Amino acid sequence: MPVVRFQTSLVVLPLAKPIGTAIHSIRSVGCVLLEIETDQGVVGQSYIFTINADRLGAFDEMVRGLSHFVIGRDPCDTGAIWSDIWNEINATGHKGVTVAAMAAIDVACWDAVGRSIGLPLHKLFGACRDRIDTYASSGLWLSYSVDELQAEASSFISQGFTAMKLRLGMERIQDDIERVAKVREAVGPDVRLLVDANQKFSPKHAIALGRRMEPFDITWFEEPVITHNRRGSAEVRAALDMPIATGETEYTRYGIKDLIDARAGDILMPDLQRIGGYTEFAKAAALSAAHDLPVSTHFFTEQSLAIAAATANCISVEHTDWFSPLFNEEPEIVAGQILVPDRPGTGFTLAADLLKRFPLRS
Image (cartoon, rainbow, N blue to C red; front, top):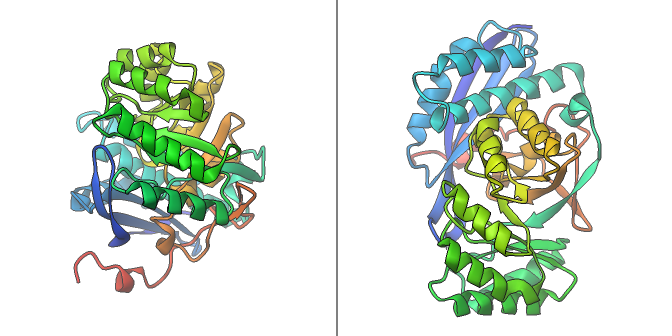
């Protein structure tokens, strides 16, 4: 079943309105779409993205530059393909754009494998569940006013969410505390509230803020300090009772291992693009499980479901609606959980008219 077609396309998905975090101003997301096809007509699909389509061409160039590792090969040989690319990119680097390109290829290959035998990937990987907890992550931005935060928090509840994430990053601790208090007031005591500082703070600031947030029953405090400051993250973790979540900007199992060794987090958050696809996600999750640490997926809601449903120590999938226009299907949320589709492959297919609706340049 050799791959005979390898094709990328570029699209830009505008957000409903510009948003801001402690480190980003986001207007859109640019996506490299990958589609492979075998000689038997089996198609596998995936995507990777950049904020505001910045350097999207470089991502596309890297994906296409690795196509010779796939064309003419059976996509079932995912392990060999991943390893061959890993060895090849030694001179280019084992982080950044190269790993993102690997992830696109790995996910597309696995999608083709599942479709070729008519099985959803979570079944192929070894399913342990058919639904998983999720949290609303497409709002409650730092750029929102308190009134906007309260209105959106209430909206998430009406959509069936029982957990949601609030972005922090104000200069004054009291201002962040006010935002936490107002969102907690809007959602009540039974909704799980997660907070994300997007790597904004110094360890001392994060510890002081965390102590002030304790009365608000915070599910986790995400990326309180810059990810490279392992010692600082460990200091925050040791000082606070609330769990510290981190890991979304780490690459491959080696980045996850560094976090584990540094005792930098209670919950690790592999990102499908940065971790290197399903093949590497499974290794990173297993490594975390060996240290009795849970994982929670970052972004890639639709495509992360397959691996989350086959990973016993995965506690949740982040729900982000930015990429929903890419797909013909939508995730189904019931009582705060996403149902894992039983459709073949990832269970999601790219819409045929994306290039017309969301061209890179109009």
